[in-house]
Length: 603
Ligand code: CO
Image 1: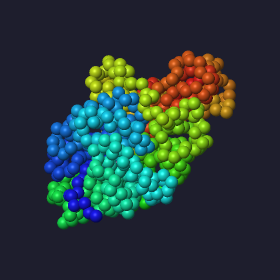
Image 2: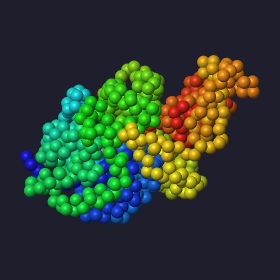
Image 3: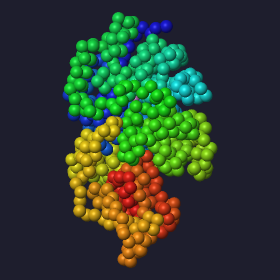
């Protein structure tokens, strides 16, 4: 039975389009010249904010994400603006306390968001409760979202992700007060005929409008969108063709063309769409090399097995390159399904996709579950919510059973309010509530950004450059531009490895250790006795120092946490290799380190 109403489209060019294809690196200045034209097209809404835009703007672009939103709002006056919100995790990678959720939503609405698309990575309704109330309080459109996933093997069904699973979730979200419901298919796993079955069923049981968000990754998205339209979906997400296809959304133009003269024709003017795409082409010229792919195929037909969402593949590649382990990509992709199974088949979406991807990288490089990020430990404790199915017992034994949450209570109930504490932390720099939220969401990189925004720290030239972690393994010039000029403040460490003496020079700015092997072995240098029996703690991977848990001179036991290293978006607790005294702390909070950097010495 056909729905006779005209088809509506949400445009994702200003958010998911460039998040998927350009690692979210378009700046406000890139997009604002075409904002007013976009506003004339007649999109149902435009997705312009949320997801990774917040993190990337502060971390890489040194640009205030709140200013971007205000700017879009001033230019786009007719089309509702929408954002992607990760439920209790907002635009970050962990659950935040309720006071943060409430204030963040209030400020997002105030600064210009009309439609909040809210999801939880585990489809755990309890993680949507607080955002739901907060969005209702500011009288904005609440779109509750189900993350689409498949158990194994690539189609709807199996023990978990059945038609009943999705229908029951949708009913539950509708009863929570959703103004519309979105099926969010992060990795393009939803096949056309499954989409037809799913939306036909949802149309029967759900009264509020239904929307489809999918990605072209596997090559099915345009067909899936068409079958969903046939089954009566009300709104589909699409992107202007220059930033469509590949791991992004289906392109909007062919969908508009396909529906021409059909009962569900969109009424969108193709001429204006072409004009907007032409303008986007000129803007994207400077990113052309970043858009070029290492492979001839623009789709990844194998995504059905690893299920990694588009935006994450390029991250994975750049992380592996930084670790000098790009050749391990296939091993990592092969490890992902088994790690996901051990975790109880969570949908792979932020932040769980990062957690699983990073764990698989670590499994391949350090051994299966040899190193587990704080986030994954929290997942095992149930702090992210309820896993779709049982977590592997052996993996679960890695956390103390008394730390595992009673799943009757909402995970965020355990979190103390955070905003007062963060206002206190940044009060010397700013009293602006949006700044305080930025810091609360990203204490390390947010603080760095706020110090630059308020002119306390300079913006280094290569920091403000729009450096994209490329997915093509061919660039060496990029590596050179990343390294600041070499300083002469070399620090020398005497390091003994299996009885051999090495003199390690560490440059505090450039920081690439220069190692010279001493001819005279094993005889410790007298005035350096302390360091000679010291053990050094090296950075196992590149990252940012979140915080040191110890101070110089502290007595520590073997296994005590020395510092937290934020790497690949995960926090990793690095522990002391021996019992002793902390005799060297080599970095400070917020410093970036490369693999092999000496982080501390324990003597
Ligand atoms: Co998406």
